[in-house]
Image (cartoon, rainbow, N blue to C red; front, side):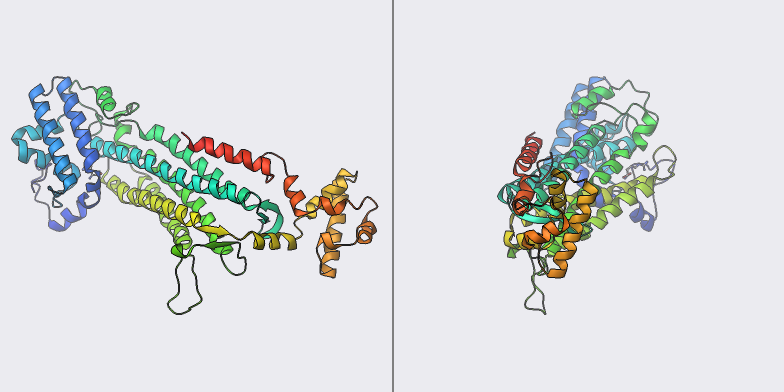
Length: 458
Ligand code: ARG
């Protein structure tokens, strides 16, 4: 295939260099964006009188046919071409003769590739957001189902204070709702058109960049041509948002791994989302959660690779930037897969409230409530804290829990204790009294569910 840039250089590049230089194996996935961009470009050139109406029409029809044929499999993308942009021009020229060569008037592959990438990413953002919403839906369903399932909340992975499984799940719901916000915010900067920036310095033709951008559904144009072709901030932003999604999924996965084991047994993942061992007959392994946790590393890697590639690059386009695509595609694919598999796994996960309750009962997680009881009776918090701590030590010595101490035991530490202490430190009271906004009380949990539902409704 003759190089589109054969001119000053003959274009007969060594085959090793050709392979090394070529990006078509991975940028061929941008074919639909490339064609849509070229159709809008032809329309703009026609509108501005740079092409005749007839030329515009023929180019538009030709490009439409190429799109249909690739989609239906009748046309196979020729991987001996350097990249998807050269392939399209070659294919158009094969069909339309020298008219095909006019499509590249007033543009460069530098603005073209930036355009294709932005168009690709804006669709990916929509798909990933839809994946996040589906996961939030499953979280809401489960939170409603387990709004009363009392469990220990942890700090330092030590039993700390009572929460419910519903309340816990909604914490992840909130994280994923921020992920939605982050993607929506990044979309504002992705959806700006670089086409017409040319190679770096615009063009001498009287083009209409705003018209072309509008044809393609962009919200505006890159206002500086050097920036337009050099900017990959939008890729970094998306990769960063994707890394944060993976970080959330990974933390959630870690807890699924931990809680599904025999030490906790808080949850049971359904058989169709677990695997066995080839040697140990008793095993039921949480591979899906582990893989999601594992794949987090590669998405972080994609982010770091992009940042490092861009570091120190002089303006404007440099071939280094061809390295932007594989990691970006990989990160988008990985996040979509992980969101889907995690949502399905969670849908099939059953909580075991009796085990959660048992752990909650054993962990002295009502010790703060015991201190608060004394505070309500007039003790300063720091004194109440110490009394509660001493009573926990007494329980450990006696091998019992706070609710099992005798009235005399309580009185021995403070005269403020009364019979009502037992009701006040029962786990159900501890949950229902935690009425502060965002807390685990039933009303507060209901409110959190309402907020999340609103969030995913638009
Ligand atoms: N394949 C190239 C890339 O992905 C397209 C832009 C090529 N531009 C150039 N001046 N060689 O970045």
